[in-house]
Each structure stands twice: as C-alpha cells, then as structure tokens.
Amino acid sequence: MKQSVSTPKKKKIKIQILEDDQLFLDLFSEKAKNSDEIDLQAMYDNPEECLQWLNALTPDLLIIDIKLLPQKDDDTGLTFCEEVHRKYPYLKIMMLSHYGEYTYVKHSFEKGAHGYVWKNISSFAKTVEAIRSVMDGDKISPIDLSTPPPPPEKKYGLTPRQLQILRMLCEGKTQRNISIILNRAPETIKSHVENMKRAVGVNNTASLTSKAASEGWV
Image (tube, rainbow, N blue to C red; front, side):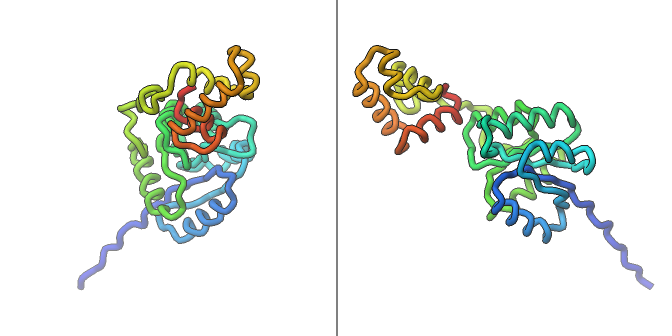
C-alpha cells in the first residue's frame, strides 16, 4: 500500500503595517486575506498606537510608510523606523513609499530598515516577494545604492546662486525675504526660481523644494 507524504504547511509571516492612507490599507488588507504567505496582524495610522502594540503582538516584520501625514516632521516614517530598530533590533523593517530617490532609500537603511519597496497595491505579489526576501536575510532596494546620483549643479546645471536661493526656499523664506537678504531685486530672485523650475522639470515652487529635499540637495 502506497502512503502519501503530506508536505508541512508553510508558516505565515506575521506582519504589521503603519500607513495613514486608509484606501491603501483597505486594499492591502483585502489582498492579505487571500495570501497564504503573510498574516496581517494589525494596521495602524499613527506611530504611537503602533509602538504600543508591537511588543504585545510580536510580528516578524513591520512595514512603515516613509511619509506619514499630517505630521509636523516630514520624515516621521524615518524617525519612527530608527526608534523601532533601537527598541526591537530583532524585528525586520520594510519601508513603503511613492518616493524612490537615492536619499530616501539610503537614509532608510541607515535608520535600520531591511527593505524598501514601492507603494503600489497593484504589485502586491512583488511586495510579498520582498517580504519573503527580507525574512530570508536579503536587503531589498528599488535602486542601486552603490552609485550616488550626480549633484544638482551637474544634473540640472544649477548655479551656486540658484542653489543658495533654493536652500533659503527650503528653509521657508519667501522670494521677497530672499531678495532682501541677498540685496537683489525681487524680479531677479523670481527669474532664478523660474529658471530652476524649468531646468528641474517641475511646475511650481513647492515641487521644486520637495524634490530638493528628497534628493538631498539642501
């Protein structure tokens, strides 16, 4: 008589997610229900609640959205990643983001993350694959961190004066403030800003300063 040998059931990876986009959480949760590889223990929309339950539920991996809004600190996700890594060094951490700039990814690993994936619910299978790889000890990154991007003066042809103005904009100074500080006509400052937007390929000053901050120009 031939006996069948049953294959041991694969243990699911226990994960939790910190994400403030409710629609994304709902979609992620729905897909996780049908997964035979991950066990979604909990979902949070704020760091305080997440930290409160981490110790009690003991997940294998925590997913953190790099941008948590509305928060005063634009790098709340990175700050929280560092805190979790310090308190729970055994816990695997994977960052989730729409942003794939070199600086964001590099800083994530410096803060203790083990993986970094795109925030795209349509590629749920790839996210699960990344989770599995991180649990196996791999470092998952969407970009090559061995080659830093060229500085903005080379990449976009920005001048030292334009970078000086850009830093001031990132500090929250208005174009009028900058014109006074640099003793230049407001029209001159405006011209520099317009030229920078054109060179970088953005339509407004907010996008310009956001790109500068995310890519580490300032």
